[in-house]
Figure 1 (cartoon, rainbow, N blue to C red):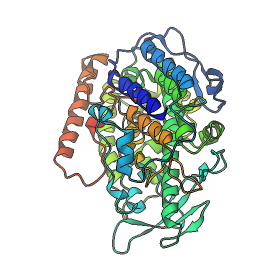
Figure 2: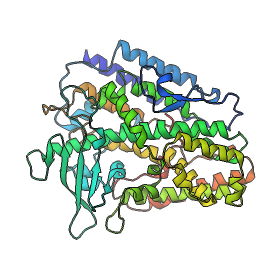
Figure 3: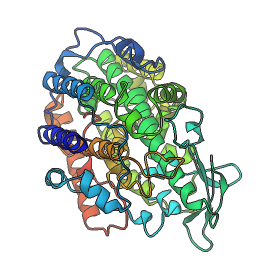
Figure 4: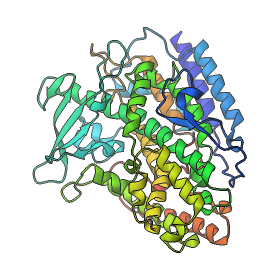
Length: 502
């Protein structure tokens, strides 16, 4: 039965991948019916989360009816012929053999197989992964000067029987005479482990399980999609008329957010969805985790310059290759939004006098709990407005890439980084791994590239030129990256999508 089940779902996901087409982003339409923010549980009664506010309806111009019908078909098929099968044997001990079975040649014709990160072999190098890769957003420096990863916030939520809690704290020390980190201690349900201890290897796997769980569930889906992406979209639609210059600036980055969020919420968070079948938590545990972590969402975490300051990371004593990569792209985005703003406003006072923009800013502060006011600063200036707008564009493009497609080469190696850790020591079962692989596979579907010409969305010739200049700046940055050696994990402009939509 498993062979039939696996073959069916592999075929289904390949079909989904191959038929996903980049959407054409239209100019904003007149908003006839305002979006009313309502608790997520009111739209999805089987997902009892009240701390997240979502749209009360999907706007007509982003209905995506074929995609939504396909999503409903997938949910129906999941109920009658689930991709999960109780009692399956664990995956092969050889990670390449396990991947070959779960990611067959037909998948590879659509998208290349993942490559194993340097930081995984010959043994996990947590110090390198802390600064170079998708998990670099987790290393922080305490008041006492200790560097650490801390995902202890995953403690206390219901997990599946037989699993270990993914909550963990990793402490690092600076390598003597270098600007790199070395893991020196891991606290988890195993106790406190240090290098050389009997449980050190298991503690490392548990720590990587914790950080990838937090990244996928909390930082990516809860904080980015739900707590930030949704409010940005309904606030922009409700407060800025279709002819407002900032509505045009943000259109590539907010279009179709509500329809996409609706579909992926059903696919991943409804009972029987991806999250509870891949990671450690039960459906109740996932819902409780989302509810509790809402209060920790902070928009400043999606601005690379603010984020590194919040984490207290000291670039004067530590190499931060991932941060430098992010900052290079952020600088191009910030230059773009400030150049665009100065076309339509000659001062901070002129921006402050814009009633639509004032209402937009007030709504953002009301629905995105932390970070908006700090990014804008006081008094109101073009520079402050640029910082906020650059953060909004950055999180919908770069941060979303980091947290989504950016884990492709990381999450599919469960010998080092399992999505769940069994107390018995067994490897994850075939069905869990197959679902993990297919979920990550579909994160890489073709979507509208950020390096597109969005000049047709502009209000006038000036705005059109600003969009074209942005495209030229991204092209120059890509050329510079092409000419530089690849020393590790790197996000490039050509990888980026224009928005967070599936």
